[in-house]
Image (cartoon, rainbow, N blue to C red; front, side, top):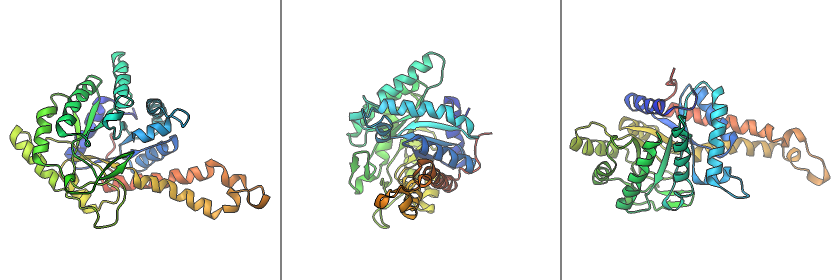
Length: 340
């Protein structure tokens, strides 16, 4: 059962929260990067989360028609087959989806899983993300209520982002400013609208200065201790200690201390994309530079097939990314925690 059932996914998240560790959530855009993520988890003996953004799904759908649903479904089906060879458990997730892409991505994917569940099967994806951070909080939560009900009926967990993450990802951007910090009032309004599990389980991407991409030191001020305030403020009102399962967005380049504080305060999932993209590409660049005359037919020569064969540099790319995924497992304390 390498792809988690709904029950196992819930168990994974519960174990992470109780053990104060988090699962790396690795963005993938190809079968190669999928294998790299699976390999990294397996080598770290960690379960994990594989996710596909709207841009990743469009790329996977092929540049002829760029269909996001086709791309996401195809890779998910592929993952269900190949993950069986890895001795770990993973959940499949879709990353940031803004309002204008819901009808072309998350809503039809939820319907795919709903049809599977109606036939007695498990959902294709185990969770989906609704990114309403560009909307007013009222509109964000209203759409969140609709999606949570549909997700729960299809045995899917919803991830919601209630306030902005800075930087840019797949065309959604926010300035780096004081709005990148979720308030206790924001969290209270979220609990009032979405409940605390009774309406369906959800993961909460709260903002504590998070920024997508990589920035020089001093440009980003993370305050992961803020998550403790959100837990306490909502927990006190509802009589439920540590009520939220938090997601750490914009995690590339974070310090060990910032990650540790986030884990102590309820983070169970941390997204990685920028760092793993670089880890995948860096060995390829090295190979091309070192074998310039072999990968190119320079000055009328024929090159060297063994150097431009995609399998040659593709294996290096997979190994480089897998190493970074294993490193993330260590940083997030999930190494050696796989389900037995």
